[in-house]
Length: 323
Image (tube, rainbow, N blue to C red; front, side):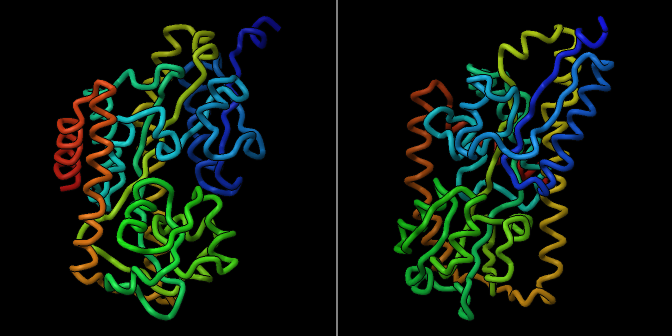
């Protein structure tokens, strides 16, 4: 009885669909590693369905509704700035582990204390989002892009698309299916191979447009409630940090890359064609991205982060690690 009462139990929320690999593999695997690293003193479980919508993950942990969760950083841009470094347009690569290691190194070097209301356990960056057409006409030119009504991930992507003339419907990724499947839009931008499968939009997707470098990548933060963290001994905290940080991030991003690459390899059988973007379209997107990054830099600098140095460091490390 005394052993059972000494356990600290962590409730970890997962906002993805229950069958998603984050809910099935990433977070359960982390809990198993935590239990092993702490010799059973810290254990946990995942509710069968999310207790809060995607934008509310940080708030739900701060309030103690759940003990730990993952947050898409694009939905908390009013709260954090450094976490958005890896989400600046045209900064990533098609190598999730390289981006994830670079992101964690950048966090430790430039804004390690940014999450001050929770204990940050890890951050990771996932497979870049892509541009897809839901019609028989691929989106390769600037004029074609401008003619579209497009679902886009909220934040930089939605703003870039609007900035060059597309009509945009922006929702969290988990809500993309209802917009795309119901024919509200004729294209979508921001989902990767894993997401078009997870959110079941493959049947509505006809073609993908490729660019010389990824337009945009998304990053996530994984954190735990400060009061719950304080219940854990310093020794067990160190053990948990050892199996978190870039470790769980590498597991997560590796699965994203693996699932996405599998989906891309099956495009022929899925009836999805691939087309290169006209250089003028890519140039227009790069130009539309510039004020977005400038605005981010201004906010980050105001928050005490050397934004130019952080972004330059991240981009350089991504290049080095991706080789």
